[in-house]
Amino acid sequence: MSKLASIVLRGFLVIFGAIVLGLSVTLAKQQVVGSPPAETSFFSFAGAFGLIASAIAILAIFIEKIPRVGVIAADALASVFYLAGAIALTVALKPASSCTSSSDLARYNRYHNKLLNGGCHNVKGGIFCPNAGTDGGDNYTSGRCQEVQADYVFGYVAFVFGVASVVVMLLAQRRGGTSTATYV
Image (cartoon, rainbow, N blue to C red; front, side, top):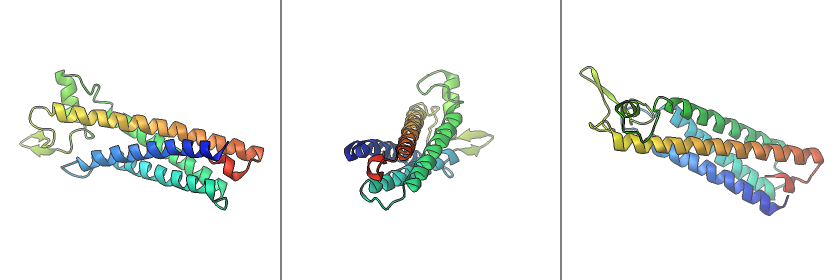
């Protein structure tokens, strides 16, 4: 595999890592009450780790002294982080059955979902989420719901690309290819 193909494939991993990091940080910054949910924070970490692993792998294309095993391990670990974070977001978002439904149940579930409401206060026996508004937060929570969905979808895609790069690198190492040609 040529250097150009390796750089292009690594470029996709950089793009997916940047998207995961960007969406997760945006969701975390919109948290107005309390700290961001653990799922959002972890996925921010996963995106940052994936970017670092991809940067190391791109450097390894040009610097042959970087051990191939280290690059494979970093890719494998980044892939596990992407998968774990995407699953965590998927499970945490599950109670909100639809991001766009205007039914009372869907609006209620979005308003009370910790990923979507931006944090809530207990006020006089009820829950008030200042960021989500008093109208049930339909506009706010619906938009955040779609952001969370995009975040975990890009996490799953990054996982697939990460696993593919590990497999290609292992196969190339097994065949005894040069280190320059195997960093995908």
